[in-house]
Length: 540
Image (cartoon, rainbow, N blue to C red; front, side, top):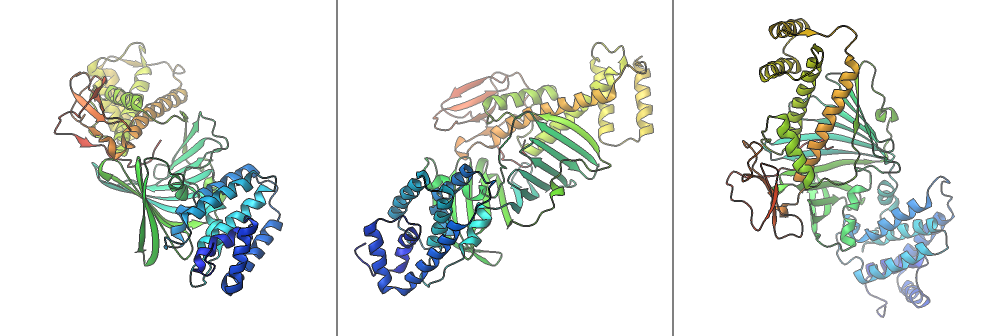
């Protein structure tokens, strides 16, 4: 620090470190010599010292876990450089070399016997003020920046998913989170009524409400999710950029400069990281996120936008209740809570499951919503057909091909709601008489148990299909993944249906119609291949 009279913004970090008690004797002497010729910096230092002192004396809630606070603060420290453009677009605001030196000091403090919580709070405050120093003497209130992000108890935002297809569609959701472990999501799909999904990660349970049909589905996860936090919690929008500060390989990032969103001036960052492409835009006046944009899938086939953020707003806890409303038909199911990420074997299992449902045929596309919906209807049809057949005598054996197809046609009309109860009863009786069957004696069948068993079966089938789809649609654009299974049936060992290039691999993995897998130097020469679409609806 030989030049004691250079621009004041270069003194922002040393002043903040001095207030936090992190400078050596020589460094402190240089800063205080600068104060002798700069009343503005001297005044700022006084304000910062007062704030730090007040914070150090403040009593923290006794139920706060120290390790949790330290981890969150260190996460904030690690991501400090990536957050700065949300507050000031000037690239030269804080020197990178000083940032590295400061991080080492702050890590030392966190290991010291001093109260780490108090030290962490002071450090975060110092970082915030250092970021908010600007040449004109304007200092934003750091509490406005830090509280919503590091201490948010509730978050509201809007999520829009746009897919190129096939088929193209737009899905809109209103998201609310409470306490970091509970989420309420109201989703509107094209040509479908709204539905509500309420999740409590601490209990491993979810409640899906369909107001149109007044049905409620309670799903209990078999995985122990105790102490897990919500995927859409208040910090996820900035943690996405923490990897940049950690210099993780395979991540490209750049500043986006300024632009206007809905009449507001915003600044942003752009990050490319498998399997997503992120842009985060924030308000330089408040430091709050304004919009998060993500693209993923082949050729950017899906775009997800988070906007309309509100932090720490009052929320009615009853909106997060897992108790089904009165008057709703309740269904219960269990979910496989396997934490492992979906892999190639899950995709193969999806192809196998789907082809078994559809007499050997593979799906027309890997669009998540379309394929899941079609498979769900088919699985429901199978359950209803099986349940009906099992209530006929003799109950042993399977229906022949003619009986099965006729019965499935009948069940299909029931699912589509094309018949009233009287018409359904008439056609059921006609089917029984035509095929020389009769119903079981009263008391033999147990409809409720049969229905619950069938719903569990459907849920298991859909989980396997969704895991496979999730593997395919989350592949990076660099994987060059293509699906060509439309119109193909199970069994042909020389007919490719899917290929992709794994990360850090020069070879392709090719899945064939007999569900065998082979390595190849080049992708198959199939002209009708379609890029794998990214998610278009709720995930597993």
